[in-house]
Image 1 (cartoon, rainbow, N blue to C red):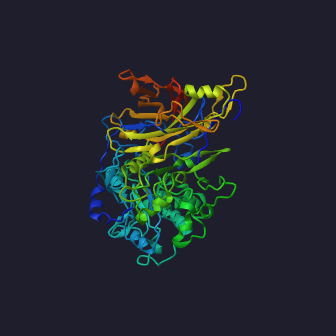
Image 2: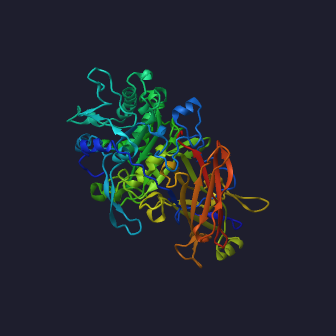
Image 3: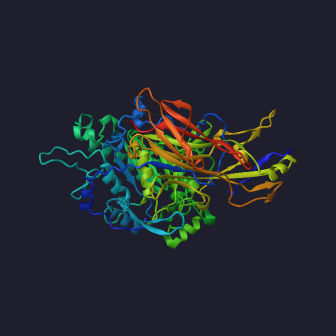
Length: 635
């Protein structure tokens, strides 16, 4: 470009296992183990920055985080009610523990369908004893019992099976000898066994049908409500049930938890009015998806799975077929994309994205080879998230990236990282979204000299981020260059124009890199009074182009514009007269005293904090880490 303009660089861009015995599950149902951990957030080097100006970006901020039923009633719940305090045995807000429905993923062949229906829990009970050390890739022993067992042990949930029967799916409700119906516990984990009609052993061998799957999910939700409240609105809730979080009939809601294709089943039910009952849809409070191909599946040179590839229903993952399933019109789609959420709040859907293709061993690893890097071995990163429309733009659903594969011993569902994101999203108190608002990016002296001479300079930036729990060998969120998951921004994205008078670059705040979405649970705080987390923020030195040629003078590969670890401690108000405060400290400051983060905005009692991020020496950066908070579950 002319006049020495700094232009942005273009960007070419589950193992089988025996199910857990009923006896063991019956025992662990009675256990309640309340762990207490501080949350640590690390923003790692190489995660790409995007430019942001001072002020508030609406892009991915969700102030209204109430449940579906509370939004309808207009009630708001201040943070603090039901929050665990030091010395308390409360693990989290009990009213956040709603029934969970698990929706499993795709079963390709008839034999896989038979294996699926033979397992009462359809894979939600599978754990793992293996993790890969992130620093060297070696395997070490780590026991993760399974999402199901952990929900039973730590959160007091129960399954829906009794004496060989599924208490929700059965035609007749369980009753006492006198004939009185016995309610299904409110804290129940229900498995949606949508493949059962397709089984030749347990069903009638019906052809798998996504429309039937979506419709059946609504029917299951309504039946679950009927079994929890046998007398409907007149059902008496005992003091014990009330203490465990059971809500009145008119406040009933459910969580949907889905793996892979199961997430498309959930979206079809939620988005397409043709499938199921509107009442059932209104009862869904949140949906959590593991490794779901929200925007289809791409395979090698074929690209998106073609519509004619109907063998085993593989064309289910064709974008046009997904659009039909979701009821998306051409106007509702974003070009060819189908990751758009309609008829449901996109901020109430969480996307967990896998970034480890190497450990996905389906078809002897050929599937992973065909899909390629920047994937979990089956679903590409860019296809694993959802978003909703916000005026003329889009609002992304909350998300986290983990170094896990689509399934297997190193799979995303049977992982500690997956479980920790799940329970924080479902049960947490506060949502915190971290953005990097960039005010200035300076060039190396040699590049600046070329720019001042009127030459065209192009640059792009990468940002890495990880979110970890203090003292734990796993991470909640991880986006890194070497895992093809770093955030990418072009300079022209961050600073699309110059001020005509001052010649200063004007940032586009909608392009500020979203570094993390985390959900904080006071019940998992080590102190019971504050939430500690750390941010390790790194911005990579880009490759510069001058007049179309790579500029390597004084260039050292792998360098950083900025790299530092930021530790933070957030303390909620102790009473109506006090305020939230966030104390922070950079690791490079040694033993310096912690500083108070500035509160730049407050909405509904939830503040937005800003922390300066500055490296003045060229190439340098002047930015602010903006942390938007919002109240999550009711208290």
